[in-house]
Length: 345
Image 1: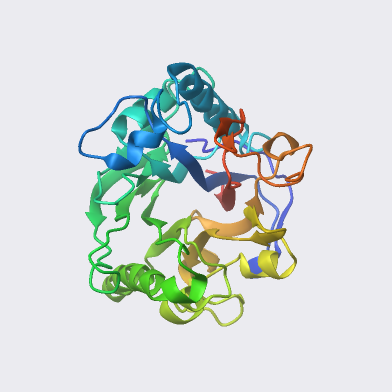
Image 2 (image 1 turned 90 degrees about the horizontal axis):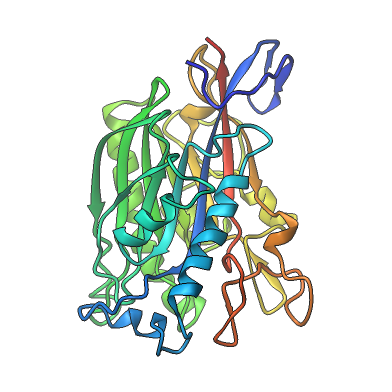
């Protein structure tokens, strides 16, 4: 089976010290925060959608909703297009209201027939969830469940998004995905750090359990972590390493540390870039095995049209709304991607 077709006649996989003069297959994994993808119907059980109604704060009409779906689908179509016309095989996402918005999204003409999805409703106080889009040509779901992040004791009974734990076969390899949207920094970074530590600990527990069962387990932790690669939720709780040397298969490797230190990010605030949208992998992806997927590179998807062209926020991600008015944008976050390669069959 040809997977995400690309002819690399000569590939230097320098990150793992292997010189490969072969045709290789490329698999693209992505994460994208959709920034408040709500439908236009009032859910009486969810007060968080009140702003996203025709008579709400954002004047969220059916026309606006349909345009937002089109804009997001355009981004998904363009991601990794130079490597594959099929785009990313697996996409983690955050800030979706329900399964309906995902159903409407995957029917958009730009990506129609490409994706299916896994989604569970969580008890988040804003009514937003994480989800996994996948192309069934390349990824077969084996199991999926929702993992609760219990911050109620630390945050006076408040609730946050669940973590989506999904395992499946990715063109021959078993991969495990943990899709995250950790608690926000609302109230201050330091004051809310403990909540993100709790979410990180849930991921770490699952990753350690999988690796204990099989040290070669291939695990991908991704999401809007509301922390940068240098924050303690990632460096101390997840214990993700920023260097490639001496990685054990069960170690977590975070390729985004070097991006962040060079000033690259996925969202802007107060004239400063943060890199909250990360894809962290186990060291098992760094060990060369013929015919198995290995890590190749990472990318912040930063096409020109995703950025504001004028005004105070020039150069920032072109978000959906500005001053409560429809901005015909995409998201306040930029997508991230990792590329996996293996020798072609």
